[in-house]
Image (cartoon, rainbow, N blue to C red):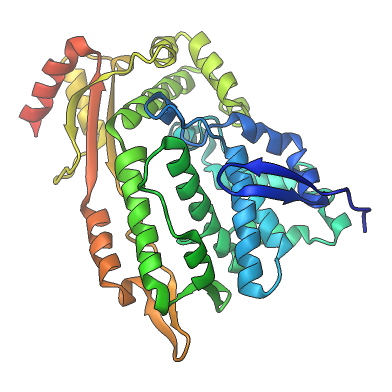
Length: 379
C-alpha cells in the first residue's frame, strides 16, 4: 500500500467543501484530468447565459462527491472504485463537450464514453490506483455503466444529479433545482441497479420534470442552439476540408479548437462570427414541431435559395428521456415496477418527450426573411 498524502479541501460553489484524499489527489493531478479545466460544460451557452463558464473539471469533482455520498448511503460505506468512476466519467470529452461529438463521429466513430474508456485503458491515469488497494478492472467496469456503475450513468445517476444542480446554478435559472437530499435518501440498489422507494416518488418525478425544463429553457434555448450549431458547422467544414486532423482534435482544449477553426480557411468565417458574438438570426423557429423533417431536408431548402454551407445552420432537436427508467420499490412488498409503470406523471412526461421537437434554421440577417419564407412554403 502506498503511503497516504495529507488530505486537503477545496471549495466548490455547488458541493461545498470537498475533502480530497491521496488517490483523488493523484488522479486529478494527471494531465488527462487537468485538461478538463479547459473544456466548457455547456459549449457556447455562455454567449447567452454569461455565467455558464463552468467546466467538465468541476462537474467531474461534483459527480465524484455525489457518488461518494450516495454510495455510502446505499451500501453503508463508500465504494471507492465507484466514486473514482464518477470522478473520471467525463475524461473522454472533446472540446466544447457534446458539441464536437456529432461532427467528429463521422471521422472517429467514437463518442466521449469510448474515448474515455481508451484513456483509462491506455494512458497512465490509473497506473497508481492499485497502490491504494483499488481495482483498475472494477473502475473500468463501473465507468462502462455495468452493475453498480449505473449509480453514475443511470437515469437518476450521480452524473445527472450534479449537472442539473450545477448548470442551474451557473446559468442562473430555477428550473434545475432538485431536492437532492431527499432523492439521496430514497435511492437504493435492486439486483445491483439503482432503485428508489415509492414513498418519495414525487421527488423522483420532480427530478425528471426539472431535467425537462432545463432542456426546454437552457440546453435547447433557441440562441444556444444557434451558437452551438454554428460551432458544429464550423468544425464539420474544417474536418471535411482536411484543415483539422480528427485524431489530434480529440485531445484539444476549447481554446486550441477555436484557434484551429479561426485559422482554417474553411471555418474561419463562422468562427470569427462566434468569437465576436455575431450569431446567425432566426429564419425559422418552431418549438413544437409536429411533422417529420431532417437537417438534410432543411439544408436542401437553404441550398435552393443560394446559401452555401458556411452561411446557415439547420437544427432539428429531439427531446430525450422517454426511455429513462428506474426500479420503484416498496419497503414492505418489494419491487412495484419501473417508474413508467408506477407514475402517471412520468407517463405523461414520457409522452411529451417522445413527441416534442424543436426546429431552428438561422442565417445572416440579410437572408433570414427569404430563407424563412422558403421553409414555410416547403412545409
